[in-house]
Image (cartoon, rainbow, N blue to C red; front, side, top):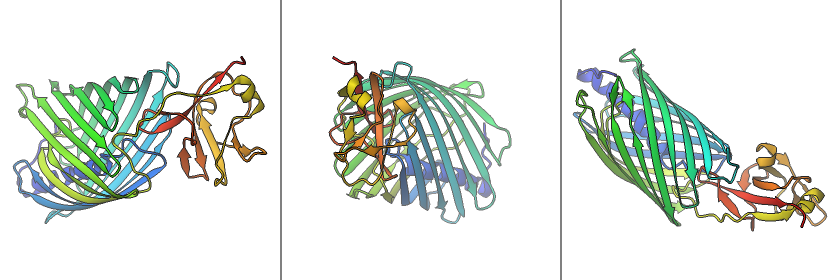
Length: 383
């Protein structure tokens, strides 16, 4: 594991890595349940009290770009954080997730493979990177679900060229009711042949103009570890002044990172967020009853949607492997799906004027697994 140096040089190095970690987490904490394509800009000021170090003031700016499909999620973020008498740190992070549905697109079982990378560079030339890969199996219903997974992690810093690897088995469960969602996670990372046990929880609420998220956790360290048992908690609130702008306030404590060897600390942050599309920590409930059509309707190509203001409309769904294809209008002005869909259950979205992915008005929708929604369509045999 990374060994932290003592003295002034060691202090700013610790600050540099923690700055990148905190800045990235503040920028992306609420972006899990996002619409795609989506962008976000954050400007904030934080006061951070690291363990055994004096407090620092840290203004930062960061950006986020996200693309979401029903089978793929991509996210990339970057930012710069300044430090009181300690230079600056540039930090970046990227994530890519791929989903599979062995029981069908509307079935309860989904498999996920994901990878994430992050890194930071201090103004003096110090740098660090962190890689993690995950494989998970999810089982979910409309109001509860769970997962079982295994992760592999790899990290290195320019302070200590020796790399550190970790194996992270995990399991978790979630439950939601209306505008709230509760999640509990258990992880057991093994680092340098030492096994840690970690339990964390989160509770989120999303209203018309307010998003709230609280978290807490506890980790038990093995007796041979230099780290003792740790606990942490915190909360964040986003007050939406407009649909595209919010005031964000957060604070709490985070625990030392056993894989990267980073100390813990306390923080409080106040910031302003601008986004093209609000990302709710708890998406609005969606109906799950599919739209019913007969095979004869599908063969004639008579399944259409009224979007009178649209100039162009594309469709992506289960039947075309989510590859956007243009739609044409019929004599009534409706945008019509391609003819010849075989009987079955389909998920789909429409893209309007090359920008917005939507579920057409009046079409029942379903959670897409990323917190967004997709339309549901069922083609039945002729009666």
